[in-house]
Length: 328
Image 1: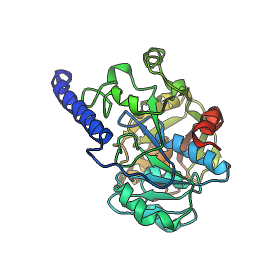
Image 2: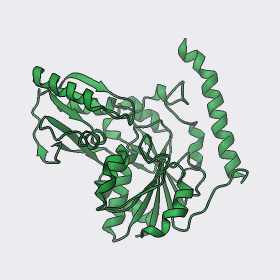
Image 3: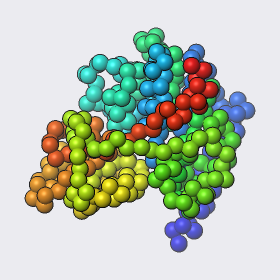
Image 4: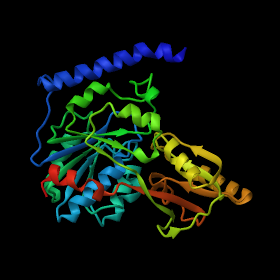
């Protein structure tokens, strides 16, 4: 019944986004041209497409060619979301206030990160305070206020075909027709997807298919760790779609006894974390979390019983694509 009732709402949301794109396309709503090449990285879904590891791989590739990027990110649910903050490599004074995505990016590359909801205004006020060659517009597919030179859209191969509908009937922000505005469509996490879902996504003219790889488990201090099969674990996650993460732990033959599933980007409180640590000690459980969560847990503790699984996109897999779009 709920699915039937949500259909009219989904139709309204779909029409609003279609109208919005049309108004920007016709110049009825203003879009600003920036003074450096802008590469937008975005998705259709409400999260879980692998956008952050893709941006990390892209920026690492740019830096491997002796260039820098400036990442424009909203900083969703962070202290700086409604402000303007430039985070530079080596400046540790801001780390406790960065959101999970910005904090993970800050630990992964040297390029500066500009955080704040009003990305165009923030750019105008801060662009002369750092050096960069490219602008990366994080989660930019729906952020039409800034013109982009390249629109890269990630499709999450683990999103089930029955959920490939506009919210609230499904998990999409807008209709698939929006993909007509994309320059490159990349099907991500193909190694984690079911065959029937891969068959569904074959209808799209994707430019690349990417596997989300893992380099194993690490402790809270980033030291490589061995998590043995049949280890009894408590999972902490605050990502949009933790199903693929859970499936990967199960593929590693871990015994999941409990899953503390937080909302996307939600911060865990020190009180709850201490309760979890005590429970794990009493029940002989090991804590496993995502990379986005480990950067937040470090704010409170360096407990030896907390580990995370590191995932990445290998930019060597899309070297030819990067050469084409970046001309490096």
